[in-house]
Image (cartoon, rainbow, N blue to C red):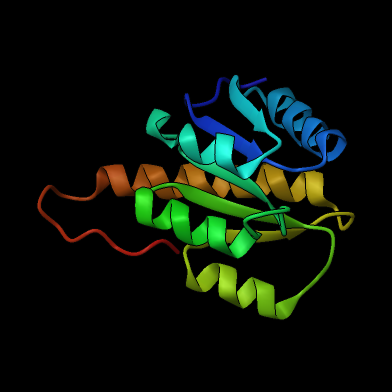
Length: 142
């Protein structure tokens, strides 16, 4: 496998089984700094570790997924949030993106390949942002 950029990845999923599958898949893609959280409060308390990406189960028990997206955005808007859900919900997708989610993946619809694709996309965006000239305005996430 190719060596990956050292990204810090959090997974927040109140279902330990689903969270573990997501974690193992990401580790199999050769990402090593991956942490699984099963409750929002613990995950939010760890944001000081400055993760690059959070895969967020929507909705998590409490607070709901949208509240977590908002909180993460207020604490550190540079974190890429990828919402994972068991259902296709256009309203949840729109609200998640409105409050800062980078992408939205529906589980059970080729989700493991989509996780790989979104990780590559985030790495590409991060590389492009690093290449921009100093002093240029920071564009909003794609």
